[in-house]
Image (cartoon, rainbow, N blue to C red; front, side, top):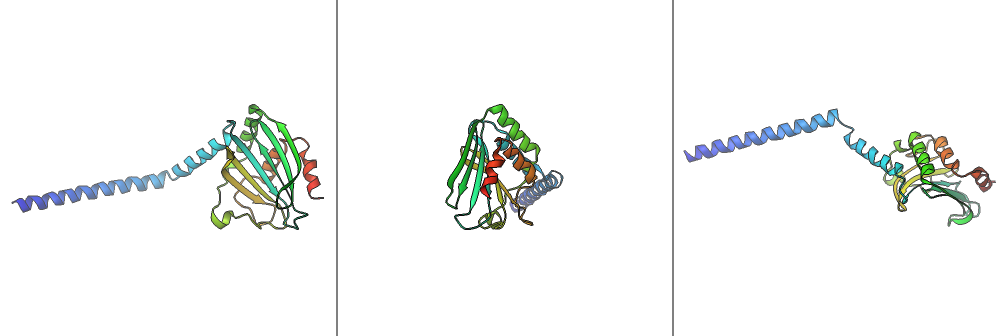
Length: 199
């Protein structure tokens, strides 16, 4: 009698366990099929929050690298936009010898307009690449490499890049022309400074 009760108890326990597993699997499959964007949405929200924050420790940076040539002829520059400052720095050689700098004050309302303009230009649509796909050394040797970064306390939160070389789109999905113009417009007459780099 005891063995019958034990066997019956084990059978009932197994049936309940199987039902729980089936129900859990069904719920998980339903969520995956009908709500597949939950994870990507949360990642997009985190990226949006990172970009649109105007706290003092936030900044957005654009690095532009020229053709890969002799050290004496190599040029690059960067623009850093923060809630308090707008900076353009040009470099000579691969060791980043500074040859030009423009530093202007900024304010939170102006910074907010800038970051919301970046967001409106689909700046956040790109997804960071990983591993060798995100290796930038030697990329687009005969053109320009554009790297865009969102930073918090000088730490890179998100990095996207693209090039002027055909077929090397990189991770930036937004219009390079539009994003580049938004950065350039933050520093009056910066185009003349940039133009001097590759004469």
